[in-house]
Length: 97
Image (cartoon, rainbow, N blue to C red; front, side, top):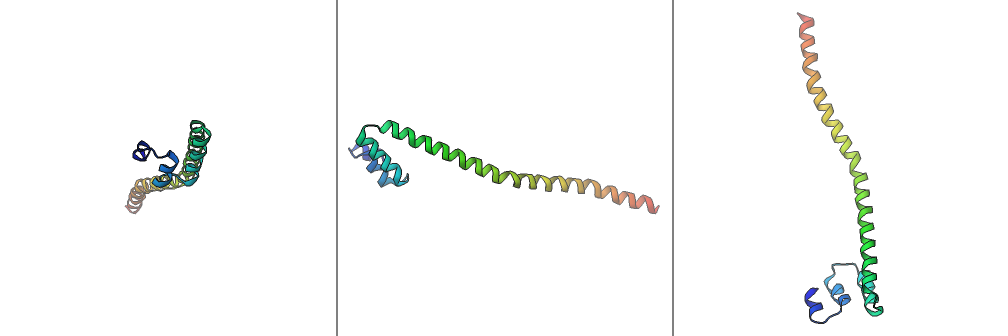
């Protein structure tokens, strides 16, 4: 993209050809270039993507939390069984003798 812009191509054209961003970002850049408000439109796009990323992270965290709780429960259950099982075996031996 940088090479295309250095050669004189519009930023919106470079965005379209690189396919690094969705088409509507290139459309917004086109509007910004023609209206002279490119900086404001790029700031709007950045705010949108920042908000969207935060929402995705919150959703992912909400989905992973129950899984972490289950895994920790299994670890604690394993530790309890590994501690209590020998005690029960020792109790059986003592009751026989």
